[in-house]
Image (tube, rainbow, N blue to C red; front, side):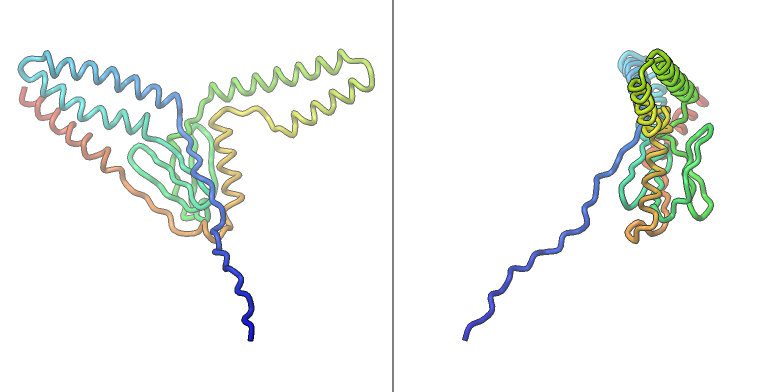
Length: 229
């Protein structure tokens, strides 16, 4: 009596997931690093060479200012994957499954709206009016150059080539500022993932006590030193 060959079982693999897309402000980080360097240089100098209450005042000022500089420059970031959006603002961390995101709004600031009616500012993607103006000028110059090339070409083949080039430029989309491009990517992710069963859940908001506690302690200590002195 023979037994049937047993086929090896193949373990089921989970659906592929892409890593978080991280969006931050390079100019904000650069400015924060510069401010931290200046504060560190002045503060350490006061701690080493200061006399009387100066070292204590310098210590309190550093304890107050460094967390705030980190909070508003280096800390803000946006993390997006196929299941949720995580917005890290100066004093809060907002986690929004895609199913709870109503949409995005861009005006003088970028905001994300949830289905409960709450709105959260996206600090890591600031709106740059100057960047929008530069993008508009680049788009206008590109259209002007394309029209000039089309007028300079007299043959039918050249006209067809110019039309194809113009069609390709239209398909590529308009020139956008960096912040507007990021918001458009987030809108595309929302459209693609909002109905996924794995992207459902409840929104959560956590306060950044690791930033708030030392800043508050430094503010209290600095107020006491200035009041007593």
